[in-house]
Image (cartoon, rainbow, N blue to C red; front, side, top):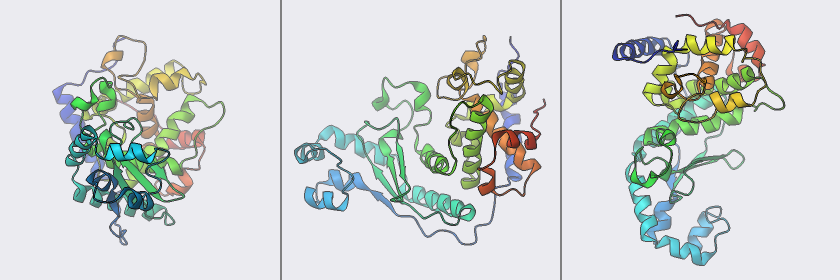
Length: 326
């Protein structure tokens, strides 16, 4: 069943041209007349490992940082040469001036669409590689965002030895802001509950991608999907074939939970159960969900984001008139 396309150099070139054309007509390129003030970006671990601030003062300043770890353990960790080395390498990868500017721009765009969104405080910290699988934490009530910088040291970093390659591909400094945008976007979109159809799952993730597009209009599409550029281009080249596969196999309205494992959750590739699997991009269900939502706004450009995220998946699908063509 070799209906999927391999991505050749010419295809990559055409996809890049098409991507540029799409970006020039980007619905989300808006003028921000009242940008947010520069966000506060604090490196907690600089103070922690610097050992200049007494532990008691540090605990008072960041009462949530030490959790349930005994003081004596924290005293040892502050002087741990290996932990300090990991922190120093991780922080050296990050251009904090650039990151602060990008986060300020992110917040400005969020507030453009959701005026009651309060500017969070952003904290960088090192978990010494312990929290790299879930590196972004957003606490909306306290209005705090925490970023584990050891999760963004670059794919193929020796510290990631033993970690699956498909996770490492989105563990670069350029992935920080897109992952923060994803985490915040999830806070706006109500998760599916109960016995949902595959279409519901695709459009749930499509809503999150749509918010990310609105919040980060200048960022490449592939970063928002935690893709490599090659993975994004494969999905774009094979959009029609992926869609036809879903339709011909009656997957859209199926409630088979295995479909999430095959086409939604992270992995090295998607599972069509064909000979093309190893060449495919992962999470193609999310890609298609994003494309359905893009088509919805192409057909309904006046719908407000706040209304869109409350809409039923079936209505979004119907009103999108989504039917990709070669």
